[in-house]
Amino acid sequence: MKELQGKVAVITGAAEGIGRAIAEQAAARGMKLVLADISEAKLNETVAALRASGAEVEGVRVDVSKAEQVEALAARAFERFGNVHLLVNNAGVALAKSAWETTIADWEWVLGVNLYGVIHGIRAFVPRMLEKGEEGHIVNTASVAGLVSQPAMAAYNVSKFGVVTLTEGLHHDLTLRKTRLKASVLCPGWVKTRIAESERHRDADQRTDPSQLHAVTAKTGLSMHKAVQKGVAPEQVAGAVFAAVENEQFYILTHPETKAGVHIRKEDILQERPPTLLPV
Image 1: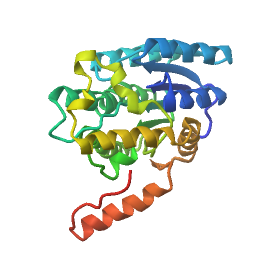
Image 2: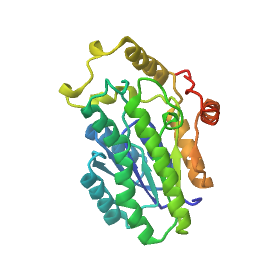
Image 3: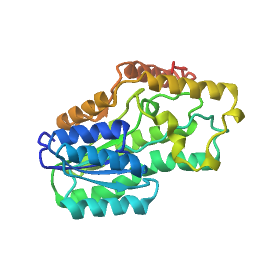
């Protein structure tokens, strides 16, 4: 999709981080915006800043784990602007725990936002986009953790692998039906965002008590915090997203080292050996 001027973008997880950077670059390309996030205060700040720059933008508080809220978001976007040309299912959370340390509430939270949030976005928006019959693009945010597995990240890994295969299937379905919609899956490595602080969005009684974690799990969580702080700028990731949209590129790998990890995983599978533990 080369021409973006005057077209409509819907972005979830848009209040800060990668989502906000994508919104800013969409606005710079002359797109109209509908931005969604669970953090209303941060969302309002982003909407105000973009409006001040001259963008036509609407903000909607949405919990993407709730199907009815994403459905309402789609209805509002189409009512306001008539169509959606770029859908970015970007909202996400992270949690550092082993599979058995992860509570049912943890699993439901991580999968609800990271995987079901994307599922709800596809179900709410794609039928409407297809009905309009115009050119469009869906970008789903996964992670390098959707391509290679890390320890003590059980729910996160599952959610991101899920987004990758979901988007691959979406690509096949859209292609076989000869639609005008394209799909991409974004698999960034470490990005300087607040993803490591995701539990700030949870009720206090559901947040992880660090003192109860095994030392190995705690070390992984600390490594994640440090890696995020040294990560690439969200603007760099956003630039890669728009390059992919404009060039109809499916896999968006923002970190060169990702390919080496994918190659190692491929060899692990082909040689039927245990998975290689890659550095964080």
